[in-house]
Length: 97
Image (tube, rainbow, N blue to C red):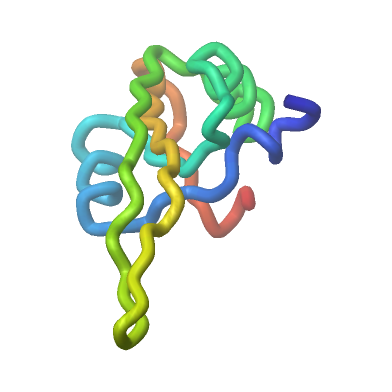
C-alpha cells in the first residue's frame, strides 16, 4: 500500500456503525482487500492522530444483483472495526475526512 488513503477507502455510516461508535468506542471502515490489520491500525493512527487498541476485519461477500433477466454479483469487499484506546477522543467523520 502506498498511502493511508489506499488502505482506508471510506467510513461506514450506518445505524449499527453509529451505535458501536457511541457505546463501544469502535469505528467502522471500508478498507482495501489487501490491507492487513497492522496496515489498517497504522493508517487510522496517522490519519486521525489517535491510538488504536484493536482491529477486527471481515470480508463481506458481494450480493446477487439483477437487471431484468441478467444477473450478476457485486464484488466482495473488506470491512474493519477499529477499537480506540481508553481516554482517546472520538473521531467525528465530517471534520476529518
